[in-house]
Image (cartoon, rainbow, N blue to C red; front, side):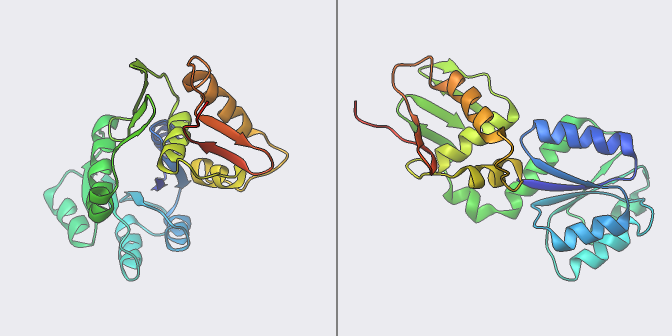
Length: 228
C-alpha cells in the first residue's frame, strides 16, 4: 500500500514516514500544499494523510481540488479542536478526521479502516490467511509462522514474503519485487532485492528441511512447493 503524507511540520512528517514505513507502507511526503496536490493528482496513492493547515494551499483547498477528479481516501490531521472545523473537513470530502496530538496506534487503526472501506470487494475476495506447506502468513495480524514457529520479520521482509505468498508459483523478477515492495525502479547497481531475499531465506527457509523459495536463473524468484 502506498500513502502520501502532506504535513508541513518536518519533525512530525518524518515521524509519520518512519512509523508508517515500519508498518509496511510505502510512504511519500510533501511539506506544502502545492507539492502535495501535485503528488496527489499525478501519483497513484491508496490513501492521503493530510494536514489541514499548510503553506501554499491549505488542506481544505487541496482536498476540494482533489475531489474534482479523485476519490482517494483522505485522513485529515488538524490542531483545531472545534467541531465546526471537523465538520468543514468532512463536508469538504475528508473520509476521517484526527486531532493533534494523536496516538500513532490510533492513526494506523484509522488508516486500516479507511483502506478496508475503500476496497470492500477486494477485501472480501482476497484471502487474508495464506498458506504453503507448513508456512502460514496472516496478512491482517502481520504475522508469519512456519512449523508452529513465529518468524521475526522486519516490515519490508514481511511485505516481500506476503507478495511472494500472494503470487506463489509465479516467477517474480527483481524489477517487479523492487517496484512492488520498495516502490523503486530496479537498478542493477544496487543489491537491495538480493540482500532482502538472502535475509528472508535465512529466517523462513534455511532453518527448515523443505526449501520453498527458489532462484530461477536469469529470471527472478519463485515461492513454491517442489517434490524432492
